[in-house]
Length: 195
Image 1 (cartoon, rainbow, N blue to C red):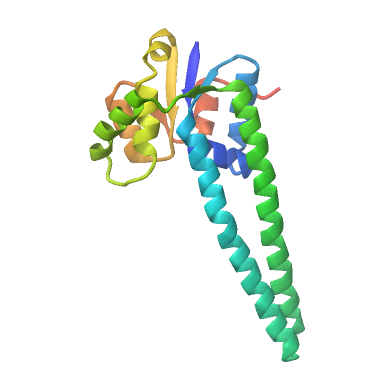
Image 2 (tube, rainbow, N blue to C red):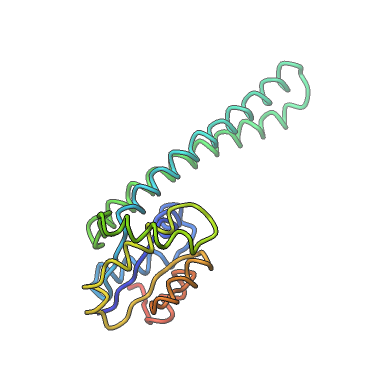
């Protein structure tokens, strides 16, 4: 059995359509060619990141609308005003598109992935992992959830931890788990193809 541990970046990259290979990975999991495992903390983190970024994009859109109104009110360059308005509209559409993408991605993952719980053992292990990483974010939680998933690790033929963070990959590899930076590498290594 092939196990792929995914994290927050995978969720957001798929939801935003940024990495086409994430779709190939999900499709392979739906066909039981591999098993996906996802720390439950990553679901929370993806939702929080999206909620944090959405108002920022809305503020930008409002500022662009304001610039357009100022140009139109002063009867200055109306072409630039229209460009500002279109850009504001595009940002709002992007928020809507990404929200739909996130909802669809999470619904799909909740159907096909094994969720790794945030248990007391994970919390304790995360505290031990954190000093080995330079930045403070959710990475110790992701790593701890994977390392606590011993029964799955022991029965797997092949295991890959997918993370875009070089420091996280190095730490996971120091614990004997192969780590790669992008879904494309998983697709290539395991010869996954989308039908």
